[in-house]
Length: 287
Image (cartoon, rainbow, N blue to C red):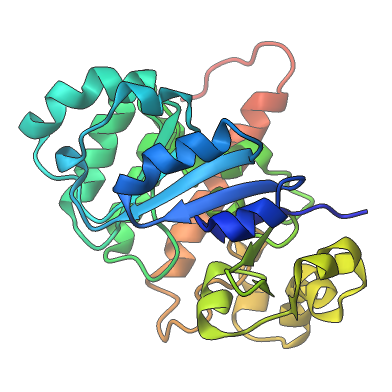
């Protein structure tokens, strides 16, 4: 039996119906965290708390009582480091991963700072990034950097789960892979991804339908979508990096100088990481 983790809003009536299920609660309001803490202490099986905010990271006041919450914070802006410094102690004590938007160039520097300070972080890579070159630089830092640093997602997750003979979908990092996560709203409408739910692209309705989700045609089709893409014989299907990109940027008009370069380098990094992880014995260094 498939028992997906449900990504849902903070709605007490809905959560009462989901008590026996593992959930990711998402909210745009930091002020509801005390209420979420109360509910978690009752009976919610909380996988993670997803917080999306327009506030710069440096302006968020972290509280010690948040330390028990497994949090993922999505912020549009790193902000000012001088303002973030007083918060660093509390952030390090928290069970938190911080994602920043790719649409502000200084966020890429901010992620390097966070990672170097041993704070888990990542780029919110759910759309066309502002600058593919900066994405590539950040990926190289995350995978090849020798100085100690915390994981930078989705790069760390992908190379850690990569196998050259299989497909690897980094959308797990963003709670957006239906093999593990499904999205549900207050009306008990169910969708494969957050975007699908917002756009009304539903696969079913009613919490009870989750008990037989493996019989849902739309759900099963989503698990096999990669094969459908390959049958279309389009540009993505012939790309060497398809097994880690999975045609997420198929709508880009110029793939040759954008996603193709980045994901080819990302695939090389994944192969490098895989070879190091599975190497046996010592190898003579090469010129």
